[in-house]
Length: 313
Ligand SMILES: Nc1nc2c(c(=O)[nH]1)N[C@H]1C(S)=C(S)[C@@H](COP(=O)(O)O)O[C@H]1N2
Ligand SMILES: [Mo]
Image 1 (tube, rainbow, N blue to C red):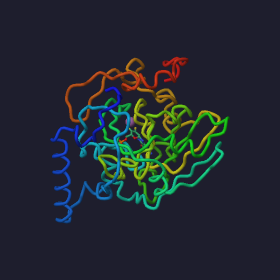
Image 2 (tube, rainbow, N blue to C red):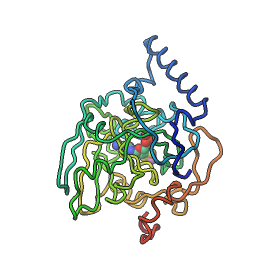
Image 3 (cartoon, rainbow, N blue to C red):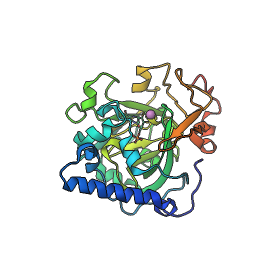
Image 4 (spheres, rainbow, N blue to C red):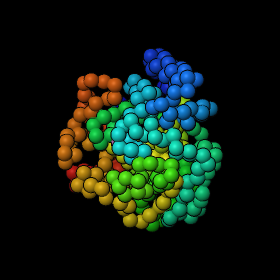
C-alpha cells in the first residue's frame, strides 16, 4: 500500500467506476429482492446503509482498488454469529444495534458512558481506505468511516499507570446465536498497548462505503487496527477499559501458541500451522506478498524497535 497520505479527494472519486457500478447493482438487486419479499441470505444487509453525511478524507489510506461492497459484507469473521464466512451476513440481522452505548472505564480520570450519538459527534468523521489482512491468509481493501480512537482516549485522560486498553464486544445470547457455542471465551475481548491504541492509524470505525456499519461488520462501532491481523479489530464494542497489565484476549486464551498479544502482520513469522508470507486478496486468484506491518511500517515500526518480533508475535 502502504498507508500514505492520499490526495485530497474522496474515495468515490479515486475508485474505479466498476466498483461503484457494482455497488449500485448490488443495491438494486437487494431492493428488488426486498420488493419480492425474498431477502433470504441478504437479510443481514437490510439493517445497514444509512448515509454518513459530511465525512472528509482522512490523512492516511491506500489507493489500492477497493474490495467490492458485496464481498466486504458477505465474507466475514464474526463468531458471535457463526464460524462460517457467510454466517454473519445471514445471522446478524438480530443484532439490533440501537440503542447502543460504550462504557469507557478503568484507569482514566474521566470514565464515561458514550451513546452512539455522542460517539458520532465526538470528532469529524473521516474516510480512510485500509487494507485488512486476516490471519487466515486473505485480505480486503475497505473504505472505512471513522476517526482516530485517540480522539476518545484523550478526552477520558488515561492515568499514568494505564498501559493497555481492553475492548469488549457485546455478549447477548438473544441477539447473537453464535455465543451459544463454546468456540471462544465470551464476551469477545481484544487488547492493545496504550501507544498502539493512541496511534493515529487506529480507528474507531462507525461505517464503511460511506454508510453506517452493516451488522456483520461490527455495527454500530468497532476498532480498526490496520497493521495487525484482522482479529485485533474488535467488532460491536460495548466497553473500552484501561488497565495496567496486558489483557488476555479471547484468541490468546483459545490458542496461545497461535495467537499472540501483538499479532502484527509479519510475513516472516509463520502461524504454527501455515505460512504468513503471502495473502489472497478477496476476488483475486493469484496471491500477493504480505508486507511487514501490512505496509504500515513507516508509521508503526518505531513502536516495536525494542521488541523481538518472533517472541512477541
Ligand atoms: N467481536 C468480534 N470481533 C471480531 C471477530 C469476531 O469473531 N468477533 N473476528 C475478527 C476477525 S478474525 C477479523 S478478520 C475481522 C473481520 O472484520 P470484517 O468482517 O469487517 O472484515 O473482525 C475481527 N473482529
Ligand atoms: Mo481474521
